[in-house]
Length: 261
Image (cartoon, rainbow, N blue to C red):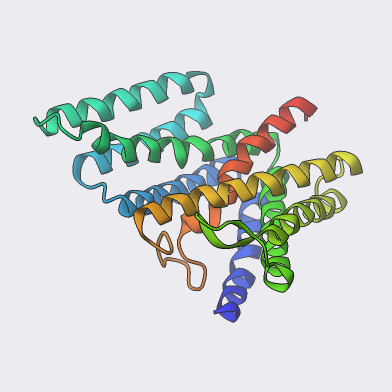
C-alpha cells in the first residue's frame, strides 16, 4: 500500500506542478471545479444525499466557485441565493415537514465545507500560482512529517474518539513539517518571504492542517466510512487528500492579505 502511494504521488505531483505553474488561471479554475465537484460528490455519498438536493448542491457549489473566480464582489449574494434554493427545493420536493432540518443539513454543510473553503484558493491563485504550490507543498510536508513521526515514536493519542491513529507526536511532526516545507518553498519559488514569516506561516498551516484532517475524520466516523472513496489508488478519495488544504487555504489567504503580498 505504501509503495502504491509513492508511485501515484511520483506521477501526479510533477504533472500538477506543471499544470498550476505554467497554464493560465482559467485552467486552474477548471481543476478547482473538478476537484470540488468530486469531493462534494464523495461527501454527499457519505451522507446519502441523493436526487434533487444532491444535484442542486453540486450546481450551487460550482456556481460559488465561478462567482468567486470571476465576480468575487457578488460572492455573499451567491452563498445566500444557493442556500435559499436548497431550502426551497426541500420545501417543494417533500411535503412532510418532519426531518426537514436533517434533510437540509448535509447538502448545505457540503456547499460550505467543500467549495466554500476551496474558493479561497481562487483568490490565492490571483496573487500568483507559486502560492498555490506553496499551500499544497506545505500541507504535504506537514502530513508527511506527521505520518512518519507519529508512526515512529507516537504513543499518546491526540484525539482517539475522532481519529484513533493520530498521536501527539504526529501533531508535533505536522508543525515541524509545515515549517520545513515553507522554508523549502521560500528557498525555491517564493523568495519574497523572509525566514521568520516562512517558519510562522508553515507552523500555522501545519496546525490548521491537523484541524482540517480531524474534521474530515469526524465526518467519516459519523457517516461510518473509512475513506471518502477509493478514486485514488492507495490514497482514498479526493476529499481525503484535500482535507488539510481545505482549512489551510483560507488561513493562507488571510496571511497573504495581512502581509499585503
